[in-house]
Amino acid sequence: MMTFEDKCNYAIKELENAGIWKSNYNPPILKLARKLGFKVPFPHYNSFFTNALSAGIYFGVFWGVFMYFILWSQQNMSATKMLSSATLAGVFFGLSMASYYKYSFKKNKLTPWCEIKNN
Image (cartoon, rainbow, N blue to C red):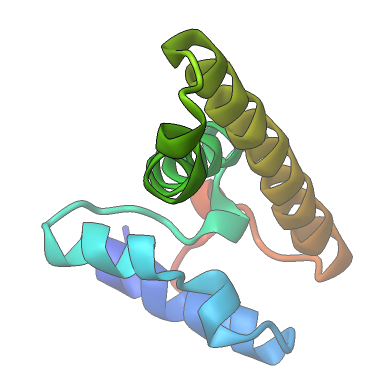
């Protein structure tokens, strides 16, 4: 049985051999999660739902806060409209990123995370 770190090392080699950029398979939020002690696989190896949810929440929150301070607070926009706009942006971004990762996984014929074993 491989350790999490062994699986990550195998996945990194596989992703690099596929020509996928490091910034694409190891985004800043993932680096932060690992520094905080979370054992999170690379996005290419996550399920569609996991990628959609994590990317959507991450983007929706940060985009909503950014838009509030830059634009919405000056427009006196209602909280309901702000929340629905941030949610819609998060859903769109999350689905887009999850679709990209699923496509990239299949295109590059990557090994499913659960099937990575000692080679």
